[in-house]
Length: 99
Image 1 (tube, rainbow, N blue to C red):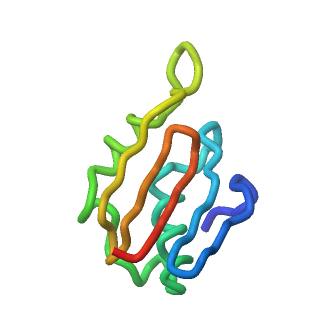
Image 2 (image 1 turned 90 degrees about the horizontal axis):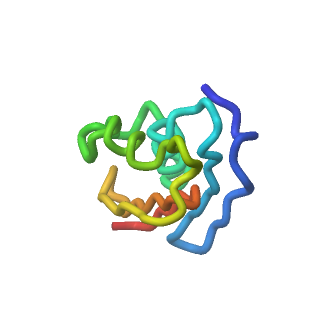
Image 3 (image 1 turned 30 degrees about the horizontal axis):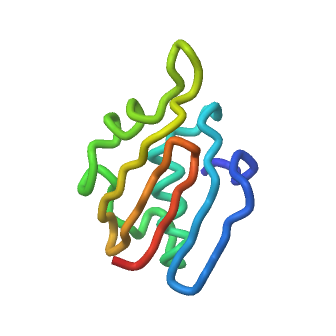
């Protein structure tokens, strides 16, 4: 399991949860999303459905990976995953709420 040190402190607001992801970290974004959803659902990451059931994890990685001229400055993607609505932004935020 990876350490949470690569992310800023999480924000919890009732049925919403946000965490900041460091896009320059070695941890795959797909792992960060799965861990954030597991935390929101108060379950082990091994207890939730695989991310690829909801979204192409490789495409998600490519969408937000650093480019030759720097980090992507805008954009977001929202999808349903494990009974949650997940939004990932180019700014590195992973926002989760109940679907």
